[in-house]
Length: 172
Image (cartoon, rainbow, N blue to C red; front, top):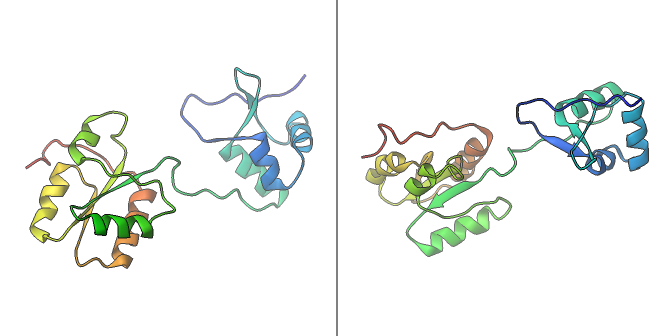
């Protein structure tokens, strides 16, 4: 009888056996043997595939003296950069090419459930517009001339923290 760990009701990050085996630099059959032996907890999807809870995998790696699985920003985290100058948008795009960033309208994003969690960084050449952008739903703002260290610091902060979004009391 195979012991299989059930997934919890709350949403968690899981790994496929392929990703876990690649991280451990072993074959998938070796990883499956660890699961069957009860050394590594996993659960089965409705389609019959094994998934390994990230916390369980990290526990297993520590117990085996293996390096931790790298965890970056929350998957799917996006940052919105808002600017009225195409050249600035292009420069920021080039700076941030490694990230999944998109340009949209703040208020629309905040009102739609599908995009409510998108992080928004406003960029303006007018410091007096900062409260307006924040009131429209931006999570942070930077002013021109741009200090790229400040831009990078704000993006890092936005992608590593949970920012509450509410337009109540923020709209001007």
